[in-house]
Amino acid sequence: MADIELIKLKKVYDNGYVAVKPSDLKINDKEFMVLVGPSGCGKTTSLRMIAGLESISDGEIRIGGRRVNEVQPKNRDIAMVFQSYALYPHLTVYENMAFALRLRKVPPREIHEQIVQAAEMLSLTSQLEKLPKALSGGQRQRVALGRAIVRKPQAFLFDEPLSNLDAKLRGEMRYELRSLQQRLATTAVYVTHDQIEAMTLGDRITVMSVGEIQQVAPPRVVYDWPFNRFVAGFIGTPPMNFLPGILKDAGGSWSAQIAGHAVPLAMPNRDNLGKARDSEIVMGIRPENLHVAANAPAGSPSMDMKIDVVEHMGDHQYVYLRADGLPDTIIMKAPGAVELAVGQVARIHLDTTRAHIFQGRGEHAPNITLPPGFPQQQ
Ligand SMILES: Nc1ncnc2c1ncn2[C@@H]1O[C@H](COP(=O)(O)OP(=O)(O)OP(=O)(O)O)[C@@H](O)[C@H]1O
Ligand SMILES: [Mg+2]
Image (cartoon, rainbow, N blue to C red; front, side, top):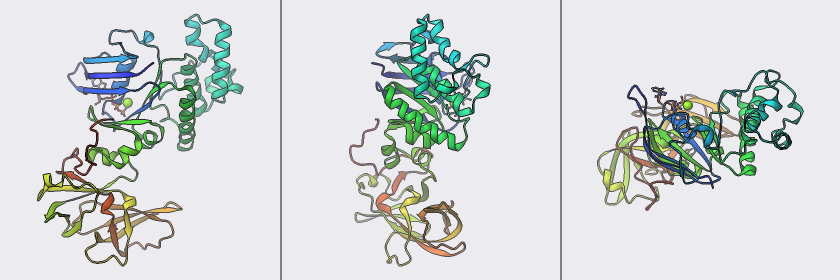
C-alpha cells in the first residue's frame, strides 16, 4: 500500500514567501494523480516536499500510512523523474539504469533481469550500450524513466518530464507513460502546467492556483463541473468564454443581462441562482457550446457577433467573434464544413443548458450552477 497523504501541508520559504498554503490531499494507492496549475502555483514545491528534497514548514506527509516528515529522501522509497533527465553522461544506458541498484548492493543477476525487463518495456533494448549523448531527447527521457522503474519504488514523482520534448514526441510519451503506469500499477504524482497532459494522464487531477488547491476530481468532472472560474478557465483549450453580466429573475425564469441582451438560462441546476439575483455574475460557456444559428427564434439564447478570425483545423474550426458590449473575443468551435466569412455578422446560439454561472467577477468566483450535493472535494 502506498497511498500518499498531505495533511495541512504548508511551505514558507526562508524569505517569508508562502509557496504552499495549508493543503489536504489524499492520493490513493496505484492512482495517477496530476498536479496542474500555472507557473509559480507551488507544484514543484509540493512534489519536492513529498520527495523529501524540501523541508516542510507545517503539516504532515504520510506515505503508506507512515509519517515521513523526518525520513531522509533515500529512505522514502520513491523515485523522481525530472524535466532535465539528469543522466550520468559518462555511463551507458545500462549503467545509468544499474547505478542506484548497485549502490543498494542488489545482486548483479537481479540487476540484469530488472534492466532487461525495463528496457523491453521502454523499447530501449537496442540502446543499452550507448552513451546518453548518442540518444534522442525522447530516448533519454525513457532512460530516466527506466532508471526509476528498476528501483521498484512505492511511488513515482514526475516533475514536467515531457516538457523538453517536441509536440509529437510529447504525445507519444504521454501514451507510453499512461500504458506503463497501467502495467506497473504504482502510485504516481505527476506535475505539469500543461492541461492536456493533465486531462489525458490523470486518474484524478488537482488544480492549483497561487499555493492553493482549487479542485480535486477526475478529468471529466473537472471539465464538466469546475468549482470556480479559475478552474473553468484553466482546463480546456481553447478556454471557456467568460461573459460578464447581471443575473435577473423574472418570476423563476432566470436570465443573464449580457451586453444589452437578456440571455435565458437553461442549465439544469438553477437552485442556487437566488444568491446572486440582480448582482454581477460571469456566464461561462465553452467554445463547443456556441453554434451558428441563422434562424434562431426570437427569445432563444442568441447574440449577433462579428467574425474576426477563423482558424481551420480540418474537421473543425475555431471562430473568433466580437460582439458590441463584450470586453473579450468569444471563441466558437464549429464543424469544419460550415462556411464562415471573416467580417460577416452571424447569429450565434448560446447553449445555456451547458453554461455555468460564476457569482461575482473575481478570478476565483464560485460556480453556483453545480449539481445539488456536488462534493466539495474528490
Ligand atoms: N527557494 C525559494 N525561495 C523563495 N521562493 C521560492 C523558492 N523556490 C520557489 N519559490 C517561489 O515559490 C513559488 C512556487 O514555486 P514552484 O517552483 O513550486 O512553482 P511551480 O508551480 O512548480 O511553477 P512552474 O510551473 O514554473 O515550475 C513561486 O512563486 C516561486 O517563485
Ligand atoms: Mg515547477
